[in-house]
Image (cartoon, rainbow, N blue to C red; front, side, top):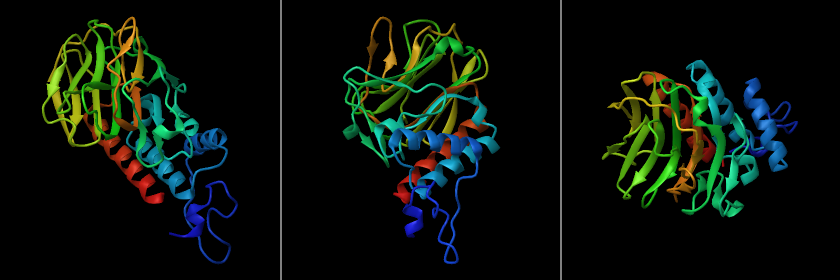
Length: 276
């Protein structure tokens, strides 16, 4: 790996040394804006290899028509510090609550690890979404070891949402519905996501495959979306000990969008690991 690839992406020689070598730099305007905000939180720009991985994610999701569906999203890996990891790709920055995550919980290559108590409140209310036009996704590099939620907005209403680990062997998904679906094949691959574009059913992606779950949609819960927990009125419960490197919440992305987002996020986390 060249020295230039280890330089901060905004260093004057990040693109290579004049007359000796060259390497790609971020080009997408939104990616550059995000990387600039991360650098401000971290106190320094991430390495060029990390920056180009982020740039590729932005370009991939835009080309696939997925990016505009992301309304609250964080890349919880790659940044130099926890503060940088909590800088949002889009939407508001999440609030670090309960006992609170610390820098020791954060890995640049694998993401943020829960302790079964701490969680992130995204500040994104489920009522912001239409019950028949919504998605959520997480990329868990290490899965829940007991029973805990990766992501959710939940208060025992007809429009509850959660993707959770269940008894350390399965995943349960409940998406804008009053009942959940146990997925026995769950927790094999890191990317877990659901999207709904109709009232009668939604799509769930796990283990590289997308399946249709027949559950009628209900009025969205008023709770905020949380990561590493589900928000349950009046308290937040089912906190997770998983390690999560990415999350997104937003509008429906359809079957093709689930596949594209899976590919884009998987490539992103792999490329960050290779760069570091």
